[in-house]
Structures are given as structure tokens and as C-alpha cells.
Length: 312
Ligand SMILES: Cc1cc2nc3c(=O)[nH]c(=O)nc-3n(C[C@H](O)[C@H](O)[C@H](O)COP(=O)(O)O)c2cc1C
Image 1 (cartoon, rainbow, N blue to C red):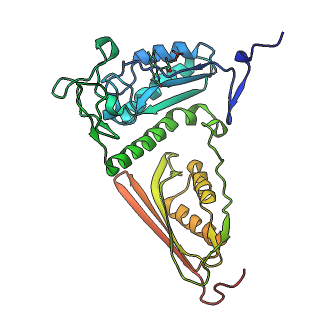
Image 2 (image 1 turned 180 degrees about the vertical axis):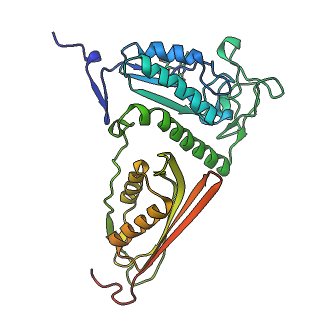
């Protein structure tokens, strides 16, 4: 008799699950200031022993104000990251290698609530454990509860960055330690160094294209730790423009590469010049503070005056 389908492997993108049993995320309301505790060690440890194909960690807040309750798990501080790494290291050392996933979350209007066994209702501002909630709009979660503050564009951008930061923290704990690069949560497309181009629609005119990549990541060649920054590309095209999806995948390829700031900016410049043969091109790398130092590296290419606009 063939094995029940439930117990057959399933390919979730590049990640092969041994079977189709997936453990849903389950809030435990047992963290301290967002940090996992021994409760999580026991909870996740026994679930990892179960033989399920995938274990999803509970909703994990990307900022303190994004926790549903004061006991919710978070991944917004070094302490949170270290506490979760401790738990997962112990789970890994004592259980079969089940793939792990994490649910990064923000509670929005549901934030600052009591744990379920204390009723789950909002903790009013002024009472112990309360904090002001933020949400996309100023609508209360329940009647008679205080409405959250509506986020403005800057607030939404801050939250977006908080999700990205928490994802980076998660990638340091989960995939980098336990999966090979091929098994990191599948992306819709793979990083690739191939830059594609298309014909410049207005080659007779000098005009400028500015591209900003605010979430560039590469690795420090000394420590292997991720470096983050904004890459700005400004260019005056000649015959060809760079195609943006290929540029996105090209830049993603640096996520696993150890390279100095000074080198990466110049390599990006060289590759873009080789692909598009522009009239002028500047690459600026604006890297985030690390060890109290921030760096901005700028490299510029200027084509020789002759031959512009000619077919190459
Ligand atoms: C104790 C408990 C905690 C839960 N925590 C989460 C959570 O962290 N994230 C989430 O998306 N759903 C959470 N849920 C919802 C479950 O993941 C699941 O979607 C829900 O229980 C419905 O599935 P079921 O019909 O199989 O029970 C939780 C459910 C329970 C019972």
C-alpha cells in the first residue's frame, strides 16, 4: 500500500519538507521583554521531537510596541536575538533537524493587551505593562478600548525597516546556522550576477536616471557579519539602460559575499559600466554605522567624449 500522502515529502520552493505536517505558529505569552525563556526551550524542544515536516515559531514582534501582550516574543534587540539563539541551539542539539520558520509580526491595534488567561483585553494606558498602540488607522480593536495612533508615512517606513531588521536577525539565528544557502526560505527568483539591459528610449538626449537601493546587504570579510547600507546609482544612459529586476537580483547576490565597502562600490560601478556603457555613471554606497563609524563611498565613471550614441 502506498504511504499516505501526508507522510510524503513536499517541496516548498527550494526547501524540501520530509512530510506535509506543518506546526502552526502558537503564541506562548511567556517571553520577558520579548526574549525567549526556558518555556520556549521546552515548548519548541518537544515540538521539534514530533517528526513534523516544518515547525513555525510563534508570532514574533519586530518592535516592542508590536507585541500583542507583554509576554509576546520579539526579535527587536540583541538580547532577544541572543535568547532565541540559545533556545534554538539547544533544540537543534537535542532534536532531529526539522526545518524552522518564524512568523515576524506586528500587533497593530491589538497591541498592549492582557494575556489570554487574564482576559485578553486592552491594558489601559497608565496601568502596568501598557504602552501606546500604533496601527494603519486610528480604529480601536474592540468597542470601549482606546484607539491606536494612526501611523504616518514616516511611521510606516520605520516599521518596514523594523521588519527588515528582524528578518536579518532571524537569518542570523535560523537559516545561516541550520540550512545551507540553497535551503534558505525560497525566494521567487535566485540572485544572479547577470545584468540585463534594454535600449535607451531617448538616446539623443542627456537625461539622468537615479536608482536607490535602501536595503543593500553584504558581509564583512573580517567577521562574516552582515553589513547594511543604501546604494545609489545615478547615470546618464547612452544606448542601453539597466533592467531593474536583473539589478535587484544582481545586488541580492552580494548578501552572501564577504567584501569591503570600498571594493563593492567599485565592482558595482565596473559591472554597470560594462553592461550599459553609459555616458556617466556614479555609484554611492552609504553604509550604516558599525563600531561607531559610518562610511560613504562614491565611485564615478565618465565615458570618453567621442563615440557617444554610436551603436556598440
Ligand atoms: C495558543 C494559540 C496560539 C496561536 N498563536 C498564533 C500565532 O502566533 N500566529 C498565528 O498566525 N496564529 C496563531 N494561532 C492560530 C493558529 O496558528 C491556527 O491558525 C488556529 O489555531 C486555527 O487552526 P486550527 O483550526 O487547526 O486550530 C494560535 C492558536 C492558538 C490556539
